[in-house]
Image 1 (spheres, helix red, strand yellow):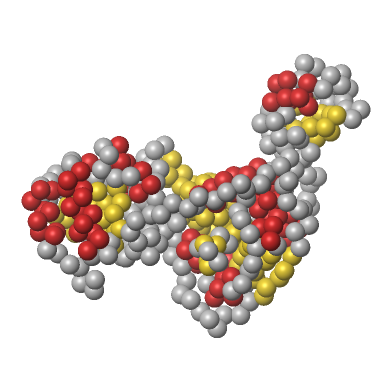
Image 2 (image 1 turned 135 degrees about the horizontal axis):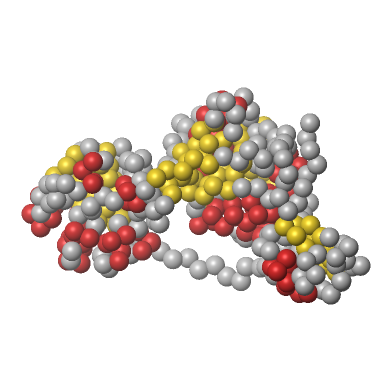
Amino acid sequence: MEKEKYFALRLQEGRCVACGLCVESCAYGALRMGDYPEISQEDCRLCGSCVQACPAGALEMERPQGDVVAPKASGVWVWAEEEQGTVAPVTKELLGKAAALAAELRQPVEAVVVTGRAGDLPRDLIAYGADRVHVVESLDFSVFLEENHTRVLAGLVRKLRPSILLVGATQRGRGLSARLAAVLQTGLTADCTELAIDPESGLLRQVRPAFGGNLMATIVNPVHRPQMASVRPGVMRALEWDALRQGEVVFHEAEEGVDTRVRLLSVVEEAVQGASWADSRIIVGIGRGVKTKERADAIRSWAERIGAVVAGSRAAVEAGLVDASLQVGQTGHTVAPDLYVAIGISGQIQHTAAITGAGRILAINPDRTAPIFGVADYGWAVRIEEALPELMNLIPEGV
């Protein structure tokens, strides 16, 4: 039997002196003054500022007592991110993983898309693994705003009660997932590298690097729903496109409306040279061992000639050899090309954890004991200046 839902912030009316200091201290407008302070659970972020501001100790942050039964929920949901009217690569990857999770739970895979114009998005989401697609279509959502998307998604989650909600750890997804978890009062495991269903409890096991990547932490959420996780692009594998897959498309009204406090003033697009991360079959990683900008430029020239994208380790970024937007690693991008060529990269775990999805790894480093050779399929222990002339004449098969 489900127990009464609790909210961590509670008011002890017998202690309250109605001074209003708690209302003034709240940066989110979650407290409104009547005879006593009234708490908006939707707006409250449980930051604790009102508890500290209350001179009478009338506001308390409580915790559940005894066993708390998780509310009933069903369905593995994926937030469908779009890129210029098409399904984002990370969404395809999450649908592939969701299909595996849902098969173990015997629950449906459901995608939710909030957009100005749905177009072919529902059909594409079904072709990549969704059994059901929830669509909220309105011109109000033609541009992405965290506040507006959070309102809509939170409303759908409260109404339909999914068990799991997966979000891509993209520039948009990171902020959206954090805000949504706070509004829904549930947990969020960010930047997961693996997801699995615990065979005994049926809970979602969320695995992510911890302590600088020196160990892998497994996190579960036994109480709150949905169980939320964000996953970096390139970690999971998408299913093959299947135009014959059948699914259901459900349209919803945006009952919550938009947040009038926030509006988009302008959009500035910045051109990025080279092929995109998602489309490139070959990525060439530059490390500190390259040493000079002249060598880095020579590698870029070679990479361009073979249709590859240039990336870099954190050390290369700090050395000024690669732009920070091209960093691969725990604090950068996660990649999964067919071939990853690591040039002058030592191979610390923060970097190697982000390239494990590569089909093949070729490492070039003069230090035979470098950790990169432990994860590489092919290794070349040679000085970078000696390797470069050979690379310039190398054209990978199929390019």
